[in-house]
Length: 369
Image 1 (cartoon, one colour):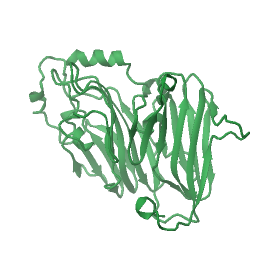
Image 2 (cartoon, one colour):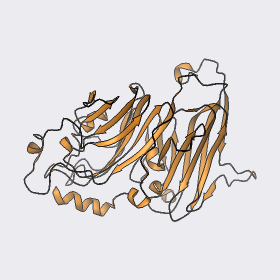
Image 3 (cartoon, helix red, strand yellow):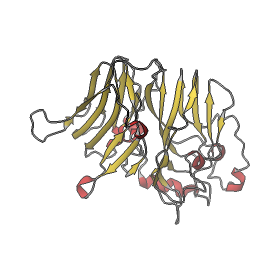
Image 4 (spheres, helix red, strand yellow):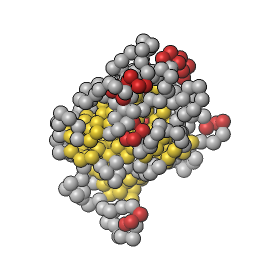
């Protein structure tokens, strides 16, 4: 089942299908309403195939609705989801914000004009194969209705999947605040001193993914609200990525800093940027009186360099060098693996998912900066 620009000239044995919110009366009310506590089914597919594209846009007046609405996907009759994440984070931007960005598998296209508010068209192009069935839904865990949910789920039908076809997974996590290895508010720390700290085992790292089975990790979206800077040094990076494969005690893959894992360097001097496999989908200030404060989201997709595992994988990253920062970290990990997958940690309740208010974020940044 080859696809992509390099295979467009090849004939394919598949049939294109779509589940969407189109108005069955033929009028123009091409949306569904989702009441508080209600779950809307986006697609309930029987047979063999692969989802190839998801498009969603939402009109909801509740603040932070992108963290209140939960997206789930189930493959082949499973009872626990293979995808479970707040809807906004899944599509590449955290903190319940929208931001115009593009990448190979995910993008957001923000609306224009005052009426658009915090709204965007959100697209996903990760292939999501299934052998018997696929079920996608969106749960409204907010206190106000979703007035308009528009969606497409574009998929292909096949006679059979390859025997080595893995299933798509995505999982949201958060640590707010991340546990700091030092007290940056004691008046004794500076950048030079924190650079002397040692972290070889990664035990205090932020965990992006823990999975058991056979598969490959294909990337993440990482969101940071920088609440706890080193005095007189606003930069939140320098946290090394450490990836442990098949139960190893020391990581096979060790990086050199947060910005380096996300394919940048020397901080994020350009701020917001979009590339096919890496970028900054949401950026705060890089200069001025409070550099690198506020809310950030960055992404790294291992499309050309997936990280394979035979038994297990643990993907982690330091929150600042040697985990010195006590900030708000959240993430979505994306991976493929053979089923069954290990049960996910319980998704935190709504109140534990909401972003830190901007005023509180600023207050906490200045407290140690």
